[in-house]
Length: 104
Image 1 (cartoon, rainbow, N blue to C red):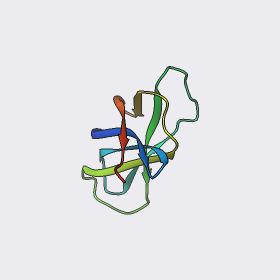
Image 2: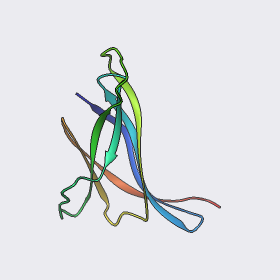
Image 3: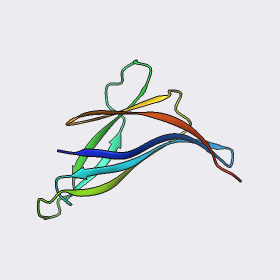
Image 4: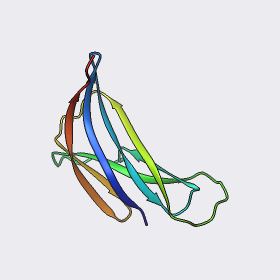
């Protein structure tokens, strides 16, 4: 079971460079798991961006206690869509993609 909260997605322009960024908080079943956002192997053409949340077992021995961890995703270049769907084992989350301009 994973819960997702405080997720934001945005296209950032800073110093003439553009990037697509996503970050948020994921509750994982144990400190031994690291959340990772990846592009799914099969992409759809639904008119919105899709990322998949995977929990990677680090192999560390740890108690099974719910733990909140930050996850981040960064890609060079802006996303052309205005919506992001994050797919995970317990469903999906949709959020709006904002445009941010960094001040020089």
